[in-house]
Amino acid sequence: MVDAITDQNFENETKDGVVLTDFWATWCGPCKMQSPVIDQLAEERQDVKFTKMDVDQNQETAKNLGIMAIPTLLIKKNGQIVDRLTGYTPKEKLNQILDQYTA
Image (tube, rainbow, N blue to C red; front, side, top):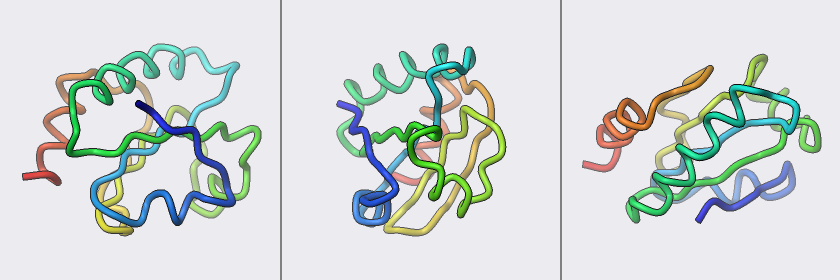
């Protein structure tokens, strides 16, 4: 399951364990390609928390993190940013990247 989060709860929702946040918008074509990949991984992996944030409705967090292009996938481990991927990322590559932080 992928949890929709907001500016108000971003820090709290991403402070524990490995968390991937998908920064997206409804009008973004590559975001529409990325979303099913995130959904599949959320079904398959119990060791990662998956969240998503609509940047049009939650501009503060995206601005604070310097997110200028979407989709941007942000990976945090225990509240610290450990990786950032901009643009569409295939499932296999994303799995490999997540494995680095969950092993």
